[in-house]
Image (cartoon, rainbow, N blue to C red; front, top):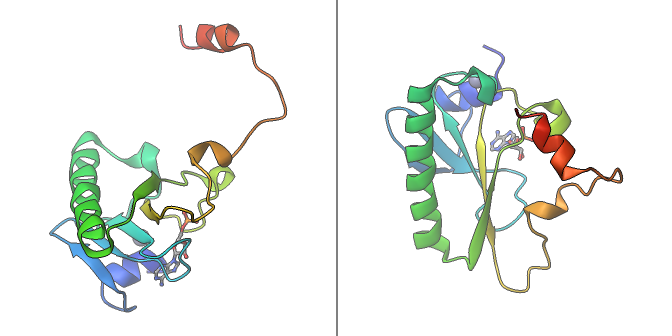
Length: 133
Ligand code: AMP
Ligand code: ZN
């Protein structure tokens, strides 16, 4: 087993657990973007979102909700950003699907989800919309 998150789930690497149930484990990120930055992983190894079936989506989102409650209760942040880096192009470094909960505090000088990327290309939104039909 080479996956670092599978090793954490198996107890081979220690973690600071935030929430755990039969299917999910949430733990503090060791390189936090903010106080209480939490990573939530399904215990089953799945590389990315496209590989998740409907049942796993349901159990995963339920775990994210429970972890979120823990974060709000313990740290009382003023808000959170929740995100997934899905795929290398999106910044995924650990190929075991995971959610980030990044607590936010008033005056922390961070940005919103919109600050991840602001493409230099301009797009005709109606032309993009046609790509969905
Ligand atoms: P990503 O870039 O979305 O794949 O995120 C992987 C995250 O896992 C990074 O934020 C890392 O800081 C975090 N991480 C890597 N190894 C560990 C570990 N042993 N314990 C906790 N967090 C980790
Ligand atoms: Zn894994």
